[in-house]
Length: 325
Image (cartoon, rainbow, N blue to C red):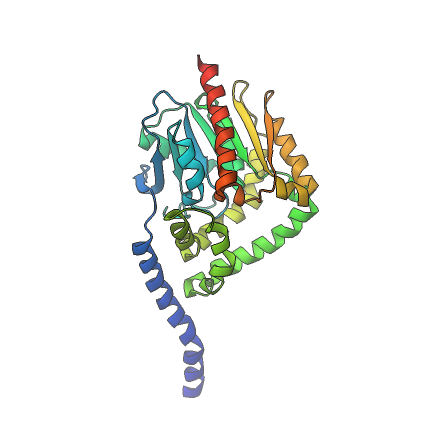
């Protein structure tokens, strides 16, 4: 019996050591790389991490950024800095990601967009809004725009997810299986620090194009156990409810719309380009821009591509302002 106990204890030792080390390293990251925003009380005992820039631009519309899957607000740094030159802006971490504490499950589009509405109320940002959604965030801004039509003056979908992409694109369906498996494994083992062993290979290249301190801050948050668990919760919700919640949404008749597509993605997967073109048809005056050579995440993290995105946002903001006069 003692021998069995000794074997079990020896087997558990690496996990215990890993858990202790992970907690120490996460606390160190928290001290060395604080978020670029601040925690904002949204009224139900929870807070969301938000960054406000460009407040000097009065009269709106305010540009609201919605991150891609598993990425913190710092990934918008190049784009938000450029847009803040001509408009008030808000970026934030959804519940369970970045610096934002976890929220109730499941992470449906309804729950997530209600969180955003409460955040904007807490910040005293009344609208109108131009919503900018990257990747998975594109689904969420569509849902918000459908629920709050009177508050939304424009939409910019940045290489946005499409509710039917996994049923229509073989390439994306194959990528989905790998993503679900990888996210689940990393979330499961992140408490013991094991995903940190892959962080340099998986995460560092994603954030390296950003300027400091956004790059190091995003890297610290994305390799945390907290962020991996939040990403798993969102992946589960995406496949079980969010696509269905968004599929029937529509864009208001006076809402300006622009779709920006990563050229490298459309080149590898022509179906992706077709789906992006469909998104531009959500509004009568929707426009479709392709950024040649841009990858999916590089569309926002690469400086040159980010400036192209900021220019399209500026055009939509201008259109929204003209609509109000």
